[in-house]
Image (cartoon, rainbow, N blue to C red; front, side, top):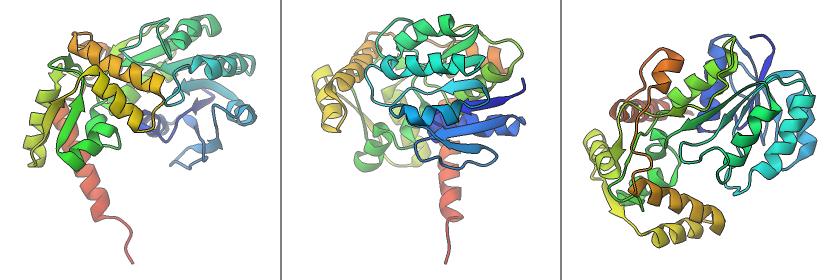
Length: 290
């Protein structure tokens, strides 16, 4: 498809990967972030969900938009739906929303945006990835506790999750944004296997050579831990509730969506951890010198 693709949250875990992969296939990309950070091959533009004055420049001439909801907002529909109506009026033809496998259409948070999207755009997709593999290697709370405490803390018990690689999510997003026919569907995206947090800790221990354990918390302990990390209490309760749902088996599944939509199998957890750690080491080895 021709025209510009606007990627919101362009510096985030999936947004940055989506920008890079769009650029790699020759698409014209506008990378939107609060600081208008420049990314290779993309036009930078300032965008803040809570500052409508930044919306017009971001939307100008855009044919497609990749939507990453505002982080930490328990009611993202309040800011997202007015923007989406404005996007449709500005000529955006296709919208691809990043949601979550844990949030159904019409459910809490971004579930309300999912429900509204087909009524706002004839061409649309809602991507519902499982939990990110990068949560254990990047800047997520799990990655920090692994580095600082050698532990993963959850209220997920022995529940299993079809953890998915952020690169795979971006690959699906690129196809959803650029294929001649929009998906007009809401695929659940997973990796190739469902793993418990004990399994995750064991793989991390083997790959890094440092002991990592899984410490099981109650729902209340998890909620309070998240709230102590400056998350709004309502949002902390929602996240802790997702862990409780994992314990009850809600995320114990795998799908063929990545294979079906990209033409290749999803990456496994061990391979992703090895790749991410190698990339981090390479960046450290080639960092700034005097």
